[in-house]
Length: 242
Ligand SMILES: O=C(O)c1ccccc1NCC(=O)[C@H](O)[C@H](O)COP(=O)(O)O
Image (tube, rainbow, N blue to C red; front, side, top):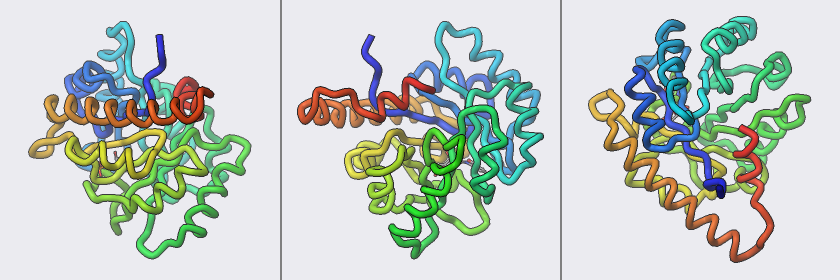
């Protein structure tokens, strides 16, 4: 069976029903927030969500999101829930990655005024580690927040980073702009939270619309890439490793 191009991560699941809707829509990854947020889940709720997903013949991988938590706590939660991947969304230094035993997504919130050179240098610090992240989640920078703000990231800068690193584009995406974002940034994946909500709750219709729009746009990129080169694309290899 051909591997579908592009990663689609749906974040901030708070109920088993949210997660089942994400799985039914065909999400590759779902995110559970363990940091202070209106989307924060307890350990018991996270376990209940994963147990529900385990009843499916095939399920999305589960990502736990953390902000400046002690590594021992992250590892304990990752083992107990269990989590397939860990997303670091805070100010964790690059060396923090070395202490984790599962695949990591590293969030990069692009502060206003950061130059392309600075952003690339910062990204490089993570990829020089013995255990580099699977991808950078490139997100908007909103002071006092670590994610889930519904604010657009800098697509120009994200596009530059995506030529060098595996980038999952996040920040202010929704069913109406995700195709344009994919065409412009050409990321390895996309990530959404606010844009699949209605009145603060995950909305199954928006979830379906987002995944369908993202799949169509990644499909178009894949066609284009296949026309240019018959070789498998690096983003697909990365996806197969998840
Ligand atoms: O979503 C949250 O509430 C959150 C809280 C604390 C740290 C990270 C958080 N989310 C990180 C994500 O990966 C979101 O999916 C990403 O920021 C995109 O969010 P949005 O702009 O709302 O689509």
